[in-house]
Image (spheres, rainbow, N blue to C red):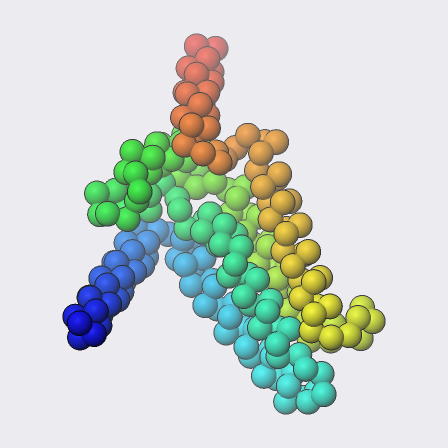
Length: 210
């Protein structure tokens, strides 16, 4: 029984690895500069954070900086929308259709059509810019984490964790609100359908005026 369970677990792991490898290949082959950069951005940021932590520990052994910098790396990975938004462009979404990656291929098709209706090569440029801003902000936050007690006067890892969590939540809220007032990016399939219809009607009116 144990052997059978281990075999099933191994098969699931193999399938998961194959799906992951296939998904990465689809994104890399169908995407452009935005998609490819943010596909590797989490790994680059983790490497950046670990390098900072190791250097800080070597140069300032008493600073206890490594756990703080590592938490910043985990925080960046946790707010996945900040790096998934540039990846999920119209070309990538269309490339995933029919491959078993989507819960609903219909939803993926609708979202791709909406992104294409923006007329920017199937990208949400505002979201991409927000993703760059967030990445740069987290790079700066990792530097602050090295000498956090000196900068803020707060000692202890828990104090930093509290500030980091508050910072992460506020950034998530700001990113959400930044997308909604402009009405440029849907947060559900129903919203995407409505916006797609609205964009189509706007183009028709513009064509009549011209």
